[in-house]
Length: 364
Image 1: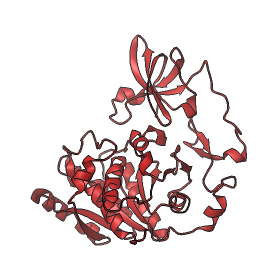
Image 2: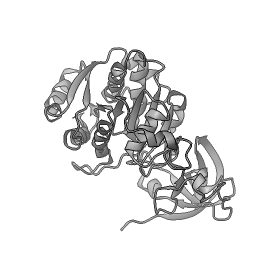
Image 3: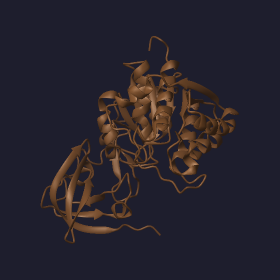
């Protein structure tokens, strides 16, 4: 049975802000804890406010989400948003039937300014779509793409396997000037556009944001149990199918590492082997960075047979990519490891971005 670890505390100071988020120090039972609030959901917290907190992630010591989360400012509730509960303000419910469910305007709803366009489109017109199972791949994919095709219009479609609010991602905040926009799909919310499914999110990326290339990955905070099927990144395989159904060109970014201490993630991660080898029924371009160092090359080669049976395995040179990654506008980190500690994870993602660039017509 699930449970919420509730606490009541008082805000002692307001800290760092980024788009959609404010961090706080909160005194709880004579101790000060770090907390995070989404003002669009809770209202704007101030020093001296009493706050109700969910401290489960904090007490678990989660690397990605190790904050106490503000649930409410019970003594100073925010006003209802303008146009609340009217069709004009939207009636898509995200994080459905949780206490903080958000009501948003869907990109294809009747009240949306994009309704007519969205109702008229049924294809992404061959758009390359890079699919990754971890949010940390996003800046590396963009680095590889921008190196070979600077000025390419890129959109990000965020699925709901990790964090639901797009605001949680400091990476996204730092990439705002490098993206045409973010589309949050499924139960995720807080993007520049809201969509119900990956399919409608891809159509919005192509036709509303006018993307030349789209990247699809979950938000921060992959959920996994260490079993073959128990991880949220399995949805990457379903995204490949969605891209193919809409006439796009799926590009699969491998989760690859020679630094991860867990055997199941060394070489080609079992996440990639399951998502692309078992779940993805449509063919994709599976990108392998080249040349790999000999021990890693042997491990990767041994893993590729089940993928090669269905997909096109494409070797992509990595020359110039390390420098591009070092110049990324946001810090690179996966499972607490940066570029120096786990270079092939990031080079594999950057190579997928480079391959997507190569798929664009020269006039794009």
